Image (cartoon, rainbow, N blue to C red; front, side):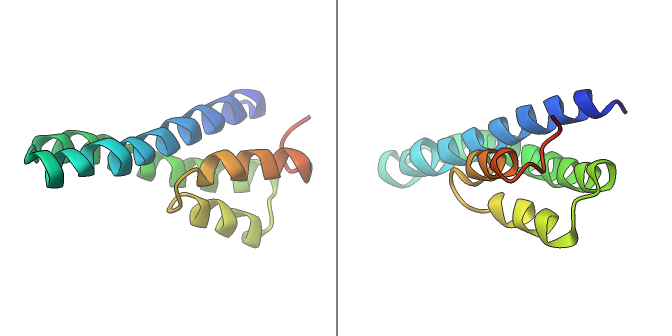
Length: 101
């Protein structure tokens, strides 16, 4: 895969993964526990799970293509379990020049 295309998809999937996590925690979980609508967690949770796996795959692919050290990829994986983590990781990659120019 072309490095520019890979980077574009990495950022897109990262943004979607982070947004789905925020939606899961901020909307679906309150709907389940406060309004008694468990279907919200089922739908948003499934979407987030798929995006989470896709994001981890993209971290792996970027590590291979861009020759990231293991610890950078590990930081990307850790970022995926924190709200806003992929947003922060993306900015950090650009600041530290691990992103393609």
